[in-house]
Length: 155
Image 1 (cartoon, rainbow, N blue to C red):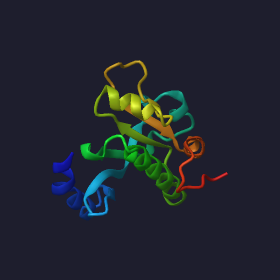
Image 2: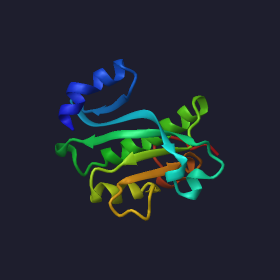
Image 3: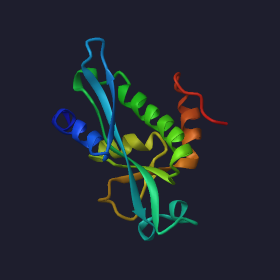
């Protein structure tokens, strides 16, 4: 994850393929980051809550990467980054509408961790799939439930 951040995040931003958000410590060392980009999901491969009344290619916001430095583990920075991403998603949705936020979990532990935020399996019938989504319509409720200090959920 470090290698991608330092080698490719700038290229992705300049190429307009992904934006990277970071949390840095007081020495300006990145301790957590997340990338966001737009994507589309084929409606035929989606569960009903996501597919209902949607176009053939469902617009979505992709959390492409999310990482926290091991030295900062246990401080809740990953959680704060997810909450920031979700608050950002609400703002972005006002300008460029999308149906859901999607993520491909790195492993089973990450898969279960994302579910804490209300993300649900994109393909619940496929045990091998690590793809999850959260409907844009459910983001405000998630933020309200998590009650982050830096964001006031829309009512």
